View 1 (cartoon, rainbow, N blue to C red):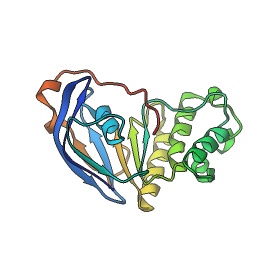
View 2 (cartoon, one colour; view 1 turned 60 degrees about the vertical axis):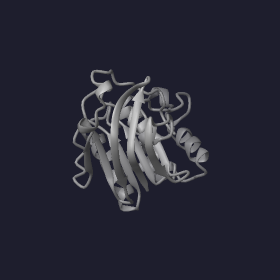
View 3 (cartoon, rainbow, N blue to C red; view 1 turned 90 degrees about the horizontal axis):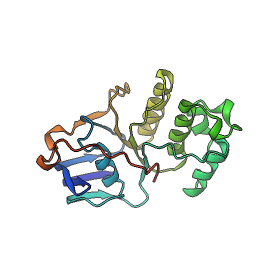
View 4 (cartoon, helix red, strand yellow; view 1 turned 60 degrees about the horizontal axis):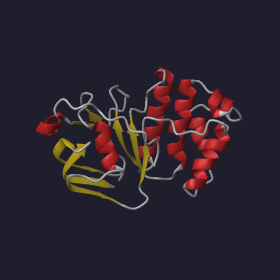
Length: 207
């Protein structure tokens, strides 16, 4: 579903990772690990096509990826239902009920996003992935603002997605309890020129 060959990437013109190769098949999850600044966000942005690589290749089909960045990407004046309806229409879909159930949003469907708590807003942002219909999900620190119960909801949604033939790539510092996920330590791929560079926080919320 996704393959990377001898990839090198840069942030602000400074190389951060190089020599990276991996493949992601249906039903697989990959967790990106490494200290702040190593290039996890930059890698996700490159995989999502938001920036070109310095070298190497990313092989992925058209209309395959859905990417959720640091921002929640919700419209504050729209309700929970209206936000999910909006994203579903963007991706040519109509079914939002499973996403509402998966992230425990049933009691919040008519509430405006601007009136949600930080955790509720984050759950809404993550629920958008389920209405895209895209088989490969990519997340940058998806559990920010989530309590333990909400982290478990997220992990369950990912596991269901994998069981249905989907795949996921996630940059996260916490253990999601997804024992089936592979962990990719980016440390060995650090480019010498990128040592000490600060991590770029993407403003891209969704693709």
